[in-house]
Image 1 (cartoon, protein in one colour):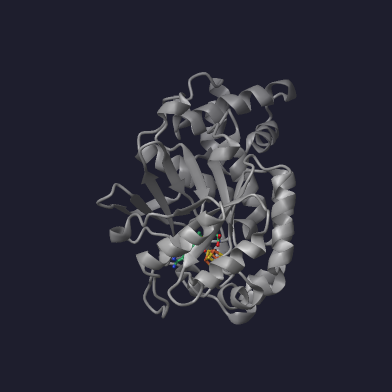
Image 2 (image 1 turned 90 degrees about the vertical axis):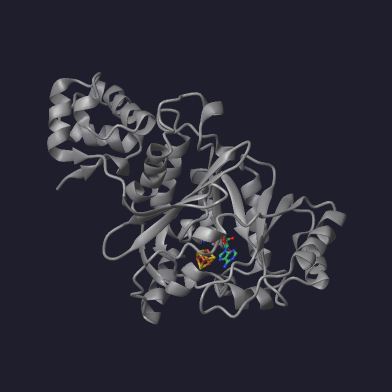
Length: 369
Ligand code: SAH
Ligand code: SF4
């Protein structure tokens, strides 16, 4: 079977080259050479890796490949947001979105085909869980997008088209912990993508033990999907809250801050009309977060077929924002981008085949914890 080199971080690649018979004293150097070609120049053809010994190139061509998920659809929105639908086999597709802004370019990356956590406002969650993405499928989204955007070649970080990565596409990144961490390490590795920890963000629904593990394994910027100021409402919106209620989640955020590259946690808060968007909710929210250093990002709810929720009005969103600002909590409202190509948050539905059974979902949730 052909081995996909996109599955390896530096250590994994060195181990693989050692298995191929590369001398121990040379494996590290060889691994770095190959990594530079693959992750810094976007080269998939071993014949083109000119500084790699010819014998090794020949050997790699026989047993290995560099293969990202294949693109099924490529759409660009009027505002420049670009969305790719990528085939990950078995009738599953995932989505990757590039959001250009004046001072940065952000790639939104998926971590799973579907999601088991079943949040009531999320179209990915509504479809159920299919499977975890491999490292190659996660890092392959960045590799593929850089090629599609012509972003390989310039080593200068100021000139990069993709300057930031957010794990906010389909799936719960911390429920696919091991593969996500290897992919994060590649994003940060100076021999690969060399992004700073501050420019790589993991967004989680709040799997408390996994937040602690991320802090120890690879502390990048953290965004936590809060969406409710109390357990009763959060239980309804996000079933994961029944397992990890808010008090414990806030403690995990404090522990994370001890190692985080930024000195605040970003809280995402989806604004759903009449559900979680009143002034009373804002007040309760301020009481709940207390003195925890944080910023809020209010996300206008994105409706999708079959959902009965509605987006809060702009006036309500502004009023809610003002309540938080009045308490000196930095609060932004996420611009809805790429609406015309369904690239907005929570629309990343793809064409995941829904094979979910209740039991299967329960097993997945149990495995996560
Ligand atoms: N599973 C992770 C990351 C992916 S979702 C998480 O839940 O954090 C990325 C963000 O989009 C999360 O904050 C999520 O709550 C939000 N989201 C999901 N569905 C949405 C919708 N319909 N409208 C607006 N935001 C939504
Ligand atoms: Fe999963 Fe995040 Fe959607 Fe919840 S909001 S179902 S955790 S992808």
